[in-house]
Image (cartoon, rainbow over all chains, first blue to last red; front, side):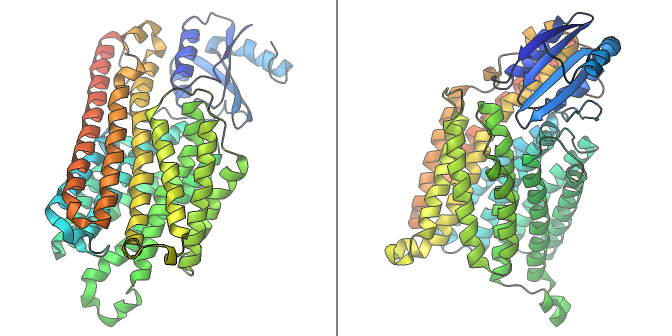
Length: 90
Length: 438
């Protein structure tokens, strides 16, 4: 699975969401978008599920999270990677 | 921590918070008219019926109206979960709050049994519904916790404010219950506790809790120091409880804690990464400086104050807190969240078709920066005229006119934003499939 990294932790709203949506618009099959963010974008989650995407969030501290977004059909590949690693290293 | 398995709500429909926001300035316009028609006598004492009407026009009609609307959107953003049945709850609470507050104001001005029962019934049902719905969310285990404790304590304070408010209101009408009712008969002390809980608890704690989240988020600033976020809300609430037994000591500590919050607020703002001109930052700075001025005025020994200031000290302190602190924060927040919510709601609709993004205007087009700047200047001028009026009540007309202009301008700004949102939303309806759950 190809990992695409995106750092939105230094952006002010609504730029993080714009950058995430832009990256998702080109997210290919068997790819995963890994986002470095300061907070969980909770309201996005339901929209992702509605759009056939899946997500996985790791909260490292109050202002440091990593969010993974991938196509639902790629869930088995993603779970294999997650099981194999304590998080995903680039 | 991993949140993948949890169930999160999307933002509630935007027309729900919008209706609270649009109604709020209308109550200040009404209050400005009340100031104009009441004349100098309104400023004689805080116990004047017209002053009580004005205070509740400001606190229930503006502050509570905006905060109830904003909390609907903030809960899913901060905690990941919104209230159940948002349309039913928000629409009902909004209608009940509007009519209930109008009845309460009318009851202060023209007391009558009908207005009394109407305001008690409508406001009781409104707050019962709202507090119940929000408490249902806040008892759950929620994400991004530092703000959640403050929100919980703030909502609990609102519950106490409402109960005490109903007792105070009943005292004026339920004379027919006889001496037994004197158990509930209350004094100036209970009125003070009602005001302290409302201002420092419901409004103050909510603003502090929300600022812990929104300032780092919107302004790319560092998080508030953890000893501040953990201790200040709990310490404030403890003081609120103590105020029932030791009002003076509790007030001394409450003012001190707010000064600490103001200093940490100024520190976080100073450390922000993006130092671009921003009116909402000016509002936050004004509110923090107002708290510091309030602290100085509060702690200056009375011997050092002139007789004129001494006579008006309580009214000056309350006005600084309500108008220069609470109103400033709320206006600054509105300037930030109105365009942000409009843009975010439209943006999230494009998740299924990113090409539709090009039909969404830039966020700044939802709220012209210059319009926000003018609102800030109007706020400073009207606030200055309020302080002059407190010292010299014959200038009441100036304050009422400036207040009216300021909030008419705020209403104009809001209507502009809302109408642009619905114009773009209609355009997207043509381009994108409509999601019934939206």
